[in-house]
Length: 111
Image 1 (tube, helix red, strand yellow):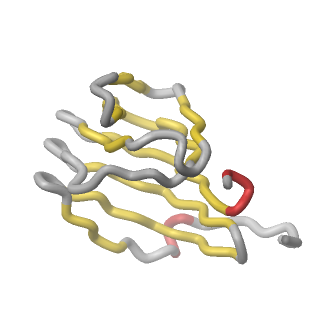
Image 2 (tube, rainbow, N blue to C red):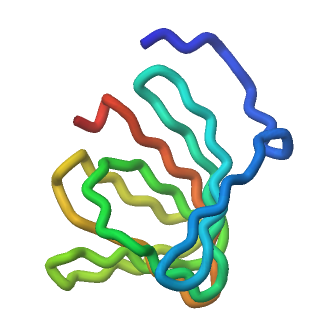
């Protein structure tokens, strides 16, 4: 994968809407071959509608959210915190009461 230098003006990237079991996630996505970079905003009261097994690098820009594991473990992430997980290493989902803004990077490098 060869990606030339590029700036991303998130103001120019359209938002797509993804409903949770409750609340909404708004994604702004920049897709490259084998790499996806997203700015994701969770509304207050967001509760993901699925367990995710995809690998991610997740950085919390604003707010607070909980990453729940299917095993029952819960990890609270606040502004400035991050987590990393490879594909198929956990089943996780996001939940937030007050909303959160995240930078999420995933792709082939996490297989």
